[in-house]
Image (tube, rainbow, N blue to C red; front, side):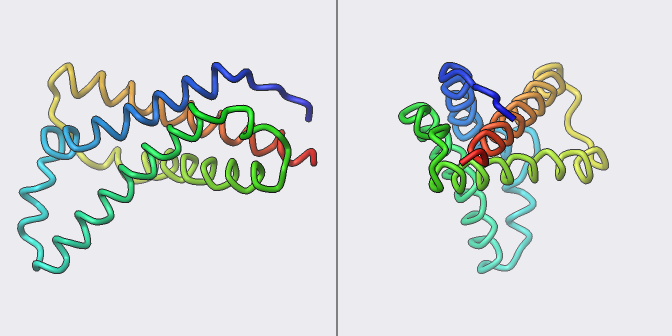
Length: 142
């Protein structure tokens, strides 16, 4: 499969990933009231939950920086490009699968910002999954 993804699409994805990292704390606090729930955990479990939240935020930000700073390297068909796009693609495909499988069971506040923001975030997640999966497939042609 010979697909060519323009750098501007990869960079747009990078900007979107950084956006998700920056709004992540707001979403946890305002949409999910996450900190109230975390306070009910034992102290060690609170720290574990916060740490994993920071991991997610850090990964989203890092993936975004990589896409913005070295988009051509993500499609140069080296083993490293294959590994990195495979990792990031699997991350976002897993995120989309989790959204579909588990999140519809939960209610989020029905304010317009949260409702339409949720649609927007889900579209971003699908966009990231598609871009990195296509990059992975392209890099398979080594």
